[in-house]
Length: 151
Image (cartoon, rainbow, N blue to C red):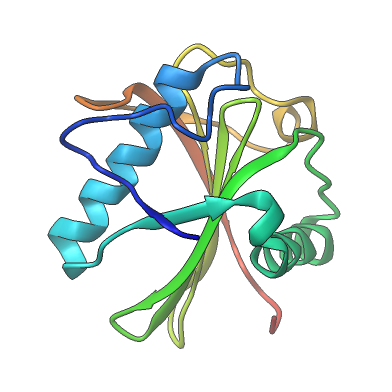
């Protein structure tokens, strides 16, 4: 059953097994606030065990586009459409969050690292991470790539 992410009262529920539960919860809340403000969308997540199709779609894009396999265990995921664009998010035990934006004009995969986590080995050699500050998530480091194929 999907759970709505509350960005006013940030909770670590569902993320307790992460070594960075507070930072990952802040990152998740930051995304929820963004979608509420930009698209008036209620950001919900469900346990990875209930979101296999979303996780498989994201992992398929990573494998096909960049031959990437994420080593960390997925904890939660979500998929939805806003403003004609398909979005998917996967939140990992390591503190990594991956999002896919798949629209008619723009298609990209984004990586965000929770405050305090190391860059995952599978991403370290291929991506540079820029920093941004967030009241909810502390310092977020992010990177992305453009999707070139149909998925």
